Image 1 (cartoon, helix red, strand yellow):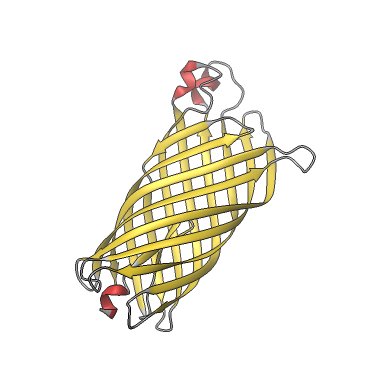
Image 2 (cartoon, rainbow, N blue to C red):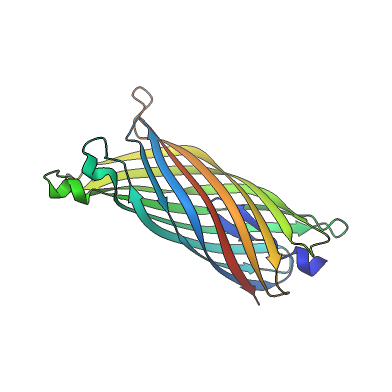
Length: 250
């Protein structure tokens, strides 16, 4: 049971984390269906896209682990459709990266594993404006770049002693900063010390002791204040995703 339970995975911020009490290296790759939205005091923009996800985890035999996760995808957004109907579908790109350090432990009697983590997360959203730029608008595109500290924890629970897979859940918090910038009209603004949260759930099924699949879902919500105390300018960023990844461990 121990070998089976230890391949369970949890969501950590926007990164899929691996739990293990055995020294091992795990690689993973997969795809997801994601929805990204901006709202608040700025434009309301929404995009549906399909990111590709990659990850690498090293887990030591004492439960310590390091995880690197990368994600990138493209789609269309509707942020400036209110200015002109031709802008209903313009280019969208989203990139995420996370470097996580954590510790995990396993209850030998129940098979339940727990983890805590801390790490760094970055994300970049690019909203293209090519259609409006072609008809005279100065702005070519704009970017929302975010980075900060994430931390949290989670747990995983075996089904039929792990023979039917493992269910994982996670809750995380983030202290993020943001930068908004444009090309063409060259404008920019910064947001500092923003608090957000992430929720995640996953189901892991091992094909063997070294290979398996993870089906997962996650939700991230962050609020950035690009104004000040007297004149707040709030931008809310939300990302939801459902995906699947294959993993191999050595």
